[in-house]
Amino acid sequence: MTDVLITGGRIVTAVDDYVADILVRNGKIETIGRQLTAPSAQQHDASGLLIFPGGVDVHTHMEFSLGPSETCDTYETGTRSAAFGGTTTIIDFVLQRQGQSPKQALDDRLALAEPQVCVDYGFHLILTDASIDKLKELPDLINQDGISSFKMFMAYPGILMMDDAAIFRTMRTVGTHGGMVNLHAENGGVIEVLIEEALAQGNTSPKYHALTRPSIMEGEATHRAIRLAELAEIPVYMVHLSAKEALEAVVEARDRGISAFAETCPHYLFLTEEEYERPGFEAAKYVMTPPLRDHHCQQVLWRGLKFDDLQVVSTDHCPFCFNENPYGLHRSKQMGHDDFSKIPNGAPGVELRLPLLFDGGVRSGKISLNRFVQLTSTAPAKLFGLFPSKGTIAVGSDADLVLFDPEQQHVLSAASHHANVDYSLFEGRLVTGKVQKVFLRGNLVVDGENWLGQKGLGRYQKRSASGVF
Ligand code: DUC
Ligand code: ZN
Ligand code: ZN
Image 1 (cartoon, rainbow, N blue to C red):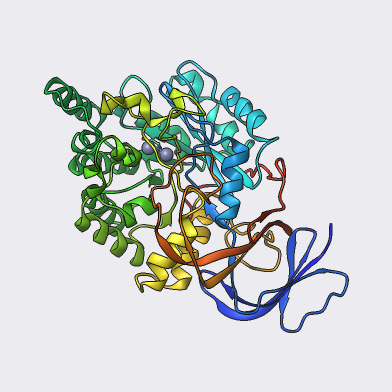
Image 2 (image 1 turned 120 degrees about the vertical axis):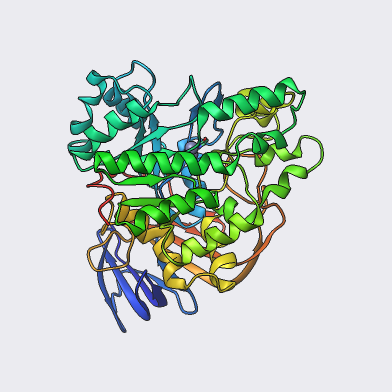
């Protein structure tokens, strides 16, 4: 493998900020220093550019079935899109169906993903069946297969939802073996009643998705999830946190010294419930779960990011097309044209996390540049057992590097993104700061608009303990 020498860039990690050269050998960072020379190496001048550790997005759904619907990015298209956005590692999901062996579910997903992935990857395992024989498999999954985080749903009764007893039983098992649990926290039973009521009154349009998933029911479930984890003595990670009531529950627990962690997503930071007032069926593009919240929640989330009440920004990339063609009704928002409860829940964004957060977070003065790296790379790598191979720029780490132009402006659009989806939540938004080059373990995979990577280049990451931070 060719050596790589990157000269004169401004290296930014979660704690450092300095100008230096980076020599990469065998896919790892060999030397960081001044005026390095390596005549036989591939040379890259990074003067005027920022160099970040490759982004780590711990919440994506490629080729994911959610009830009758399926996301429209394959592992190939979704991870290529991730790379163009400066993300070099994703943690995607394996779904264990009722009655299915978790290990079998993992093996099936690995077989599907491995030939396709363009960036490094790991999996969280979604459990829907916590019967004793299934839970017996978890220690080996944690210790041998590198699956150290398990997601459970407190919503979607009859499809994904686990009751408190099943959640608690799973927590007990995972906790004794160095794992963490990730919770989708919404009170699924109550939400079902609200949906029934709305439909009975003839309220079928997309905005009722938001009106039937109130933020206090996210707060209630978040509080319950943390209390269960506290009793089970296991670290807990709240996925896609959107509501101030949910953040209050996390803060209250963290203040008491409980290992409670949480992520939020760019759509909650940059969009509000006003999107649901769009005419016709347009609002369906913004049907994700939890739904977009109000301006006050948004301010509270930004404050949480700044003061470490929230530790991670992930995308929850869960793309469904707006139109039925060309990928079919089951991959399209049109499934719920006449009934909001049938609109597939999810939105795209794996490519936009770094540009959005840099522009709207760093440039606007809401978070520092170091904090930006912490939120998008270092903290997720540490929390999910990928550090120090991933998440930093240091001698011995994987040479996953993003060369970023902090001054280049570009307009976000479905016409220019690389995901397999026909709309963007941020269509027409002008942002400053653009990914220029991306290296995955020393391989130049993105060079401007050119894709130089290849499917199958991504490597499965067996992760060490999660929730140790
Ligand atoms: N939760 C997720 O994490 N992703 C998609 C839909 C959902 O409800
Ligand atoms: Zn969820
Ligand atoms: Zn998700």
